[in-house]
Picture 1 (cartoon, one colour):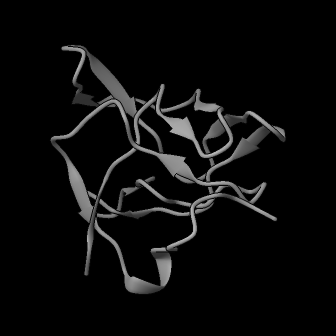
Picture 2: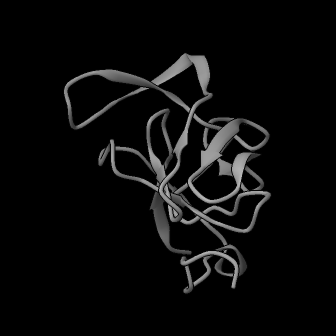
Amino acid sequence: MPKRYIIVVGDTTTAGGQTIEGLPDVRVACTDGGLRAVTCPGHAVTCGQCGRTTVLEGAIYFGNLRVAYDGAALACGHRLVSRKQRLVSVEVAEENTASDTTGPS
């Protein structure tokens, strides 16, 4: 199973939006030196083309906690892009790893 970086608040989408919601008690060290909340399925995202949407996909992180990952689908059809952190990843099943991350046609 391929590994994908997990998504944190402030990460982007394939349509130019960003994640705006995360778990306040689960934070990850990021490339800017700060700690950012981890985003999960159901959390809010702004999509640069579609407006407000939510995260659809997640992978198991700790116990039964499902977290969003690089390439995870949004309800609008676009995908998440991990840019803020490069330390924590999750294994993702092959069927959840789309090769086309450009969003809906």
